[in-house]
Image (tube, rainbow, N blue to C red):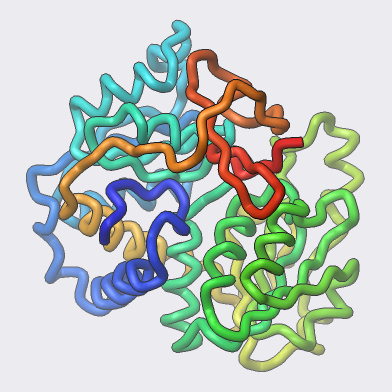
Length: 354
């Protein structure tokens, strides 16, 4: 694996993902063989927003590899509450640890950390942008449960606008053969245009639909998502969207017997509890596979020679159009943009620059 950090899964080649996926499958089959892989190493978890599965999954992964864990899960209990910048926090903590996982509510935050860190950085979720380790988990789940990742019709249902797990997985699946996406959402929560452009540029097919019932009979994989209250500007806007899509046994009557139902969790009410007893419900297995995916990733990154992240785009003083981008939230960050055709995109958050 040539990359020294995991900020965006697309920083790696498909072959490098496959190496990690295959290692995760091997670990899941015989975890005891890897019990001392990271003996003497320290993982720091910097979680600037709440998390249960992702944080505990990272902690469990490192402990199962024989390493140790430090970090925080509430920035109010750290020097962040005193005004310390992300860059300074990263410099300090990366001097204590051998690898660092960061979860942050602002998009592009992990890319900033990677430029200042003295150890590998793992993006554990940045705002509504990306969540690459969840994507690795999803790919490991498909490999274990279906046996392959090519030639699938994959439905994404719910919050496709702010859902970083959706964004990361779509970008990854575009690199597999004969993938069709069915995007199930309200107009207000549809997939952002720049991700639809990415699908087209990678010669994949997609279809927008409003109804889960309309799409479910076609699907090999159904990726349900929570309507994320924390991403909405007001509770009123959230309440308009929260109960639009609910998967229950009645809807599953029209689905394939081989369907795999995934969800990054936590769920609220978008999957009825009755579905848990269906053999097609795969989301609790998926959460367990997340530990093996992160064990494979941590051990792989710690086997590399560390280098600070070098921006790949062109420096500019123009502002990113995305108000949620880290470049619009903290001062002193070097802005960088890349070109696709005639359009310019922010390297930190992938938003098109108007």
